Amino acid sequence: MSLLEAAHANSAVKRGLTLLGIVAGVRPLIGPHSASVEISTRCNYHCLMCPYHSPLADKVPRPGTDFMDLALAAQVFKEVSKLGAKIVNFGHRGEPMMHPDFASIIRLATGEGIQTRVFTNGSMLSERRILELIDAGLTWLVVSLVGATSDSYVAIHPEASKETFGHVLDSLALLQRLKRKTGSRTPNLELRFIATKDSHPEVAEMVNLGIKFGADRVYLSPFRYRQDGNVGTLAPSWDEERLTVERLQEMAPMVAMSGLQINPEELAVYHRYGPVSQTFPCYASWVEMNIEVDGNVTFCVRSRTSVGNIKERSLRDIWLGSRYNALRRLARKPDIRPRIMECDCDRCCLFYVNWQVTRRLATFGLVPKINGVENGISRQENGSTTVVGDGLAASGSHAQ
Image (cartoon, rainbow, N blue to C red; front, top):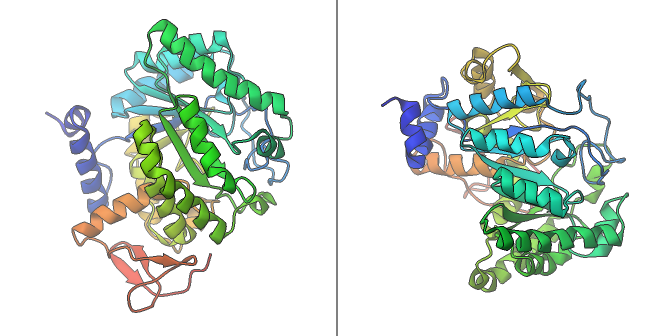
């Protein structure tokens, strides 16, 4: 049995081989765990917190096409499946449901045995669309909300009204009714809330919406993009983030009884270590691949650095190629990574992956143990600042 076949057969083997490849530091031993596939760059919203469509954000370059064509999508899914990825995430710069052949896209992916997860604002959900998604075999429907009330929702979505918010909630209830009617267990429902300086007090309301509408998971994250024009003005303060974490932790025992999954540990990690995430090595490129609407493959979902294009080379050749591997090595050097990779996040949205990998490697003494963060500064026990990277610890000052 080859390494790839072994990884296909056992997720624990896959995680172990991924870590082994990271330790060796030459190239991955297996393919990515997941792939982010952008099928649309168009969006019907201009959410204020969006780094691409917000009127507060800096203008970013746009590709020459709005939608991924079906032939290219079929090629992507076939090659992603051969690489061993278990799930495809649809999102990135646009609203996936604006794709004119959205249901066909999902069928192509599920036909390759891949789990599918769609990130959507939920405004385009209807009975016809939901039935199409059930029939196509969508695994996860992730509906992104910012606030849990009509007032906070309208405040962050310039085009939306209180009726729009009501439509999204009605669609969540309709989803559950249609799943029961068709006898389908999927798509699973995740509600994803972004805590801004204005919406962070609504933690209880956010969780209760998940319980009310039968969600499988409620995911909270603090607003992180702080380098896109004036978008950063929406971010909560350190203390406001702390209150968000504490509120979710307080609700955890009650929520556990309902069967709803929430993410208090991950939220706490983001709060405690997120402000210094740029001082940690980046391992995201060992576990995820990002394919854009025109077939371009970028180093990560928030990087503009290209590592190839599926129209010119296979995803396998790109994944194992010299350029990708050279960038993976550079990504482990926090002092130069932002300049080389064009990372534009103040706090990396994939940081939890990096934190988990670093923690596992530290267990075996391969990198220094991660120590605490207080008020946005990571400190060792002797008071100096911790910078984890390539098995070395350095000192410096890293404020929020």
